[in-house]
Amino acid sequence: MNLVRAELERLSARRFVQLMVVLLVLAFAVTAATTLAGSHKPNADEMNSARAQAAEARQGMEATFQQCLSRQNGTLPQSEMGQYFPEECSSIDPIRQDRLPIPADYLPGVFSFAGQALPLLYFLIAFLVLFGFLVGASYIGADLNSGGVVNLLLWRPRRLTVLAAKLGTLLGTVLVLALLASVAYLATFWVIGQTAGLPGQLDGDFWRSLGAVHGRGLVLVLLASALGFAIATLGRHTSAALGAAAAYAVLWELGGRLVLEIVDARRPDQLMLSSHVATWLSGRTRFYDPQVCAGSTGTGYCESFYSLNWPTALLVLLVLTGGLTAAAFAVFRRRDLL
Image: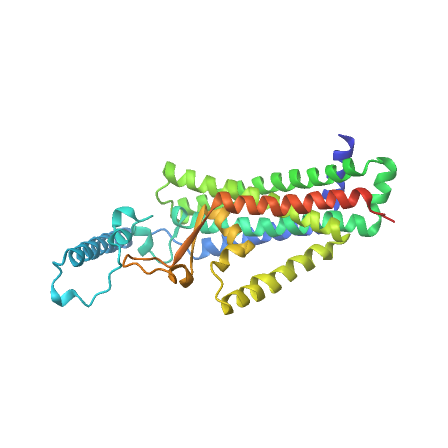
């Protein structure tokens, strides 16, 4: 317990951590202030017009679906044959859509909490992932580079215990900060929606969906923190984690993707870490690949899409983070720290 308390004091006293917390608060404040300044409470005329436009859009979707069915049955008038319809009419069935047009979609300049909460939450998660990675890398990297770990081992000469205490303190602190930031962030925008915009339809499905994304986001933040910690431990410096992240982004996410496209590789997106991150957050993602239907010789309809699901994405993220963390502990146990 004394070791954890000492590590918590060391972590909270680091100027870089304090600076990142200030930047976190500043980013939230700017986002909230911009949203508040650009929103207003809609009047009765604006609401009536928005409701009419939403109803008209839903009727248009239903009409298009019925025309598609008529084309499938061969009863579509010749004058309407030039209109584009998908091969499978079920893809445009209004009942099967994730969401239908609502009045908030036709109220420019009006903030809707129900409509904007998910994009705002994604922004929060992205910032917290960056926060966790940088704090995790600097926390252990600075101690290894300055000799702070050696001084600590003179007091507690158990390498793995010391490193585990550092990692546990980091993850616990980041988790608490992420939870506090999430509550304050979402509560702020909920108040803006109530006072200077529209709350939207805040039913049980909305909160369950938002909670699921938030939970997956917290897991991603902890994984990013552990990843930054592990890479910095292996490289004995904060810059090792930053360099590794930059090298991966340039060499593989950009260069590797380009090479895979040149050679017409099948399903290149499933080889990218960013694809698995997006899949984990959203639960399921679809990617376009013309090679999927390249070998199809049947007369049936073939979609040039393939999907990634969250279990696969989580497995990839856990294997990557767990493998690097285990390697960091193994190297730290035998490394000469002087």
